[in-house]
Image (cartoon, rainbow over all chains, first blue to last red; front, side):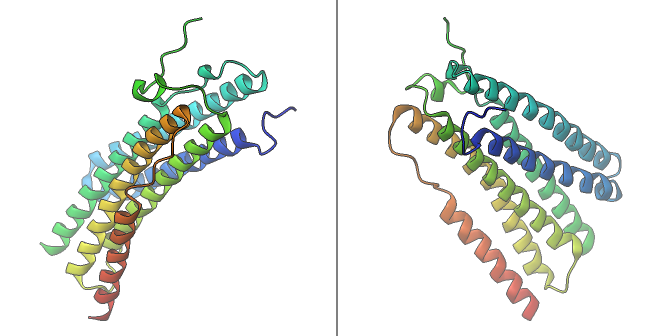
Length: 114
Length: 120
């Protein structure tokens, strides 16, 4: 199999994406386990949404790598490489996780103090 | 051939295609920021959720500081990616990570509060 770059940068990037998606998946599964205790059905929704988003991300990552690989191997038009949608989406996903973390912590603190 | 319109326009309507390896490295940097943010969030939540033997007020403060840092980190990731990608295309100087120092101070402060909270 030919590679575009001996340093395997496209492959390393794909793996970095996967590590990130798996981190999100792990956080979602923990949330799925723990949040329903505190937030009831909302906790289930948050955890499930996170798990689904992580799954979608993993599929999109796979497609992104295949696309990059084909463009670069054929020395194709690099303007065909992916833009920033996935990156923006990942940023929003992480910010949402931040919102959930904040809500959970405040709820726990209030419940503990009450 | 009509070039694809890519998002965001503020990046891709300027300059030329950089070496793909630099763009890929830029992506990996962004992802590293995201993973750092997730770790900070996990730390902040765990601190409060586990209810360790730490003075409650300080523990909550440290937890909120870590979560705050965990919310800032993806922002640094995104804006860093945008500015770096644009600099790569325009062949200008790369930006520095502007939030790196504030984030370091926040994490350090949280650690300090935890230390004090354990001791009192």
